[in-house]
Structures are given as C-alpha cells and as structure tokens.
Image (cartoon, rainbow, N blue to C red; front, side):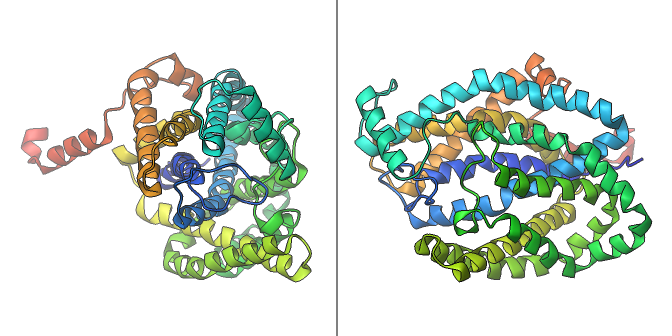
Length: 412
C-alpha cells in the first residue's frame, strides 16, 4: 500500500489547473490565432502571447492527465475499483453536471461578448443578433464549427469520465507486466525511454494540423483522436504509479530536461509553423511537426515532474493551499477571464498591461471566493468531500517561521 503523500506532484497538479488563467488570458492577445481556432482577439496584441499560449498548451493538459492517471492508481490501491468509481462520480461527474448548468452558460455569454467586442467594437452585455449572425458566418467560413454544443474549459472533466472507464484495463496492464517489473523499472529510470514516449505521442498527433491539439476536444461529441491522445497520458500515468520508484530519477536530471526543452520547443514551434503554412500538402513538414511536438511534450512533462519532486516535495502551507484551492480556481477562472477581457477591449492599452490586469483580477477573485465563500461551506464538501479552514499561506508560513525560531522551552 502506497501511504506516501506526494506533495510535489500535488503542487504540480494544482499548478497545471491554475495555469489555465495565464493560458486563457494570453489567448485574448495573440497576434495570430491557431488555424483551427480562428477567434477574434483584442486589437492590442503582442507576439509574446503567441509564444506563451503555444508553450503552455504543449505540456499543460498532457501533464495533468499523467498526474490524473497516477493519482487514480493510488486511489484504486486505497479504495478499490468500486470505491474509486463512487468517489469519482461525486468529485468529477457531479461537478461537471453542476458546471454545465451554471458556469458554462455564463462562460459562453462572456466569451461571445468578448469576440463581438473585439470584432465589431461593440460593448453590449446581451449580444446583438445581427452581429452574432455575421460573426458566426465568418467563423464557419474559416472552418470553426459553431452549431455543435461544447463543454468549454469543462471538457477535461468530461474526458476524465471516459478515462475512468479504462481503470480495469489499466489494472490488467499493471498486473500483466508484473513479471517484468524489475526490467520495466530499469527502462523507466533510463533517459532513453523519453524518445520512445515521444515517438508514440507523435503518432497520436498525426491527425492534427501542425502537430498541435487545438481542435475537436471541447465538443459534446467525443473526438476520437483527442481521446486517444489524452487517454494515452492517463494510462501511462496510471502505470507510472505501479512503477513509481522510477520517479526518483527525474529530479536528478532536471537540468538535462531543461536544456533539451530549450532546443525542442523552438524547433517544435517552427515545425508547426511550416506545417500550418503548407496547409496539409507536405508530408515532410507534417512529419517534422508531429515528431518535434511529441518529443517536446514529453521533455516538458519530465522537466516539470522532476522539478516538482526536486523543489516542492515537502509539506508547505503554500503547496497545501494551491492544491486545495486549484479545483475551484479552475472551475470559475474562465468566466472571470472573459469578463475582464471583455471589459478591457474598449480601452487602448498595451497588451501586456491588459494581460496582467486580466490575470490579476481573475486570480484575486477566484482565490478570494475560495477563501471566504467556498472552503468552509457545502461547496467544498461537494468538490472535495470535506471542509477546510486554511489561513492565507503567507500568514501560515510566517507563523511556522516564528515557532521554529523559538527555543524549545517556549514551545514545549
């Protein structure tokens, strides 16, 4: 039985959720939208946000699904399959259902408000029907489906529900490989397995323009390529817990992963640019794009998992607060981002300033509501199964430092 508390991976999981604020805030200020996501953006924009969006998107959800698989395996070990399904129904399926009728409609309205304001210069809270019709026609002409229902940022909860159906298969794979356990541990601990994972991920990226996953996964109709792509990370994360001893090797090689990422990410970005520019007519460009992106994604997964285990794998008020608040922050962040972005469209300000205002407002509003309205209420029980009484982490850290500085006679 695995009784260890993975503080570093908890922090990383929370960080991947909170990183949605930066990702979605940056998307409003890109110079060039992805070809498969041709949404209008703010007239105040900058190339740095194209870079930020592409960078975060290359590793954020793959890393999250690896961690989701890892912690699902841990949960199965502690509660069994039936207990895990009951827990996931309460903590994932129920919040998804609640979000569909509360968070999702508000997000959709505010996102439309932003796009209409960015495209036509209007600033109406209730969208003008004529402007909405014109915008819809323009998006359809650029290949974006507008008549299919979607889940917005809640799509990851929807996909998790599919991936939990794979738990029996994951368990079977873990048991089937048990006789090769020592050999598998050695292989996983070797840095030469990273290219193998990268090549497999490259194969799952083949259906995507530019080797980048920007299409299909947010829709109600399950997108098979996205299920295969993201589901692979979930299954591997589940198996990683079975062979968790290999995690000790990741922190030791953080500097190698960082140097490799410095090379691979610009290469992947350039390869995707060439492939998108060829509009699917070049086999060589597409092959280069999927290979570079597959290898880059796994390098970044190794980098962030290794860094989390090396620098954050300890008990800390900050780690505890981030890990417990991140679910709420993720659920409510996108309508807040859209609200701030829509309100700022009317002002002619530098894109960097707008971005900082959007992120600052969203983070403040999400954390304040968690701290005062969520953690001690039934909402926390609904999301986490329990209430919390967390103080602000900087206060807790200061108190711990003060206690540590006192002589033993004063604290006994």
